[in-house]
Length: 138
Image (tube, rainbow, N blue to C red):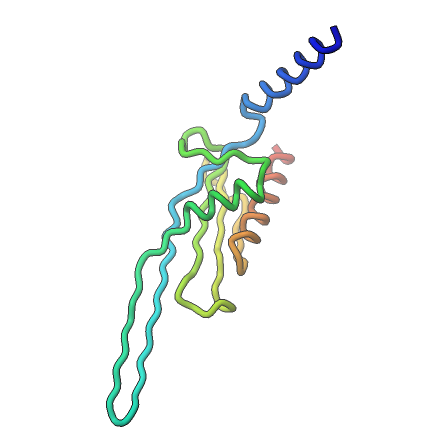
């Protein structure tokens, strides 16, 4: 009898979790860019080069949300999301000068949080706290 009760309680808790008690978030495609290059001279002649292009970070951002913000579920279906996250990671600068900019919107379009940090992990941590606070305010 006790085993059946424990199994029933466990299945009800699991069903409540699966039914969407965690808010869903949609992460937009990252439009991050990276550039590099330089020029130099030696013995009266010079040369150099420059390269750059898109360096999307969307998969890294999703991975970091799954690791550091377990109270949300990342979804690919924007219509089911309670929050929309836009995160851009600057490239092509020295490690100290790079910024990660993040904005969190409610599904209706209102800004919940915007900020800038040096790392993707800290940006995710700050966004997660903002979504948690927003959930408590609703």
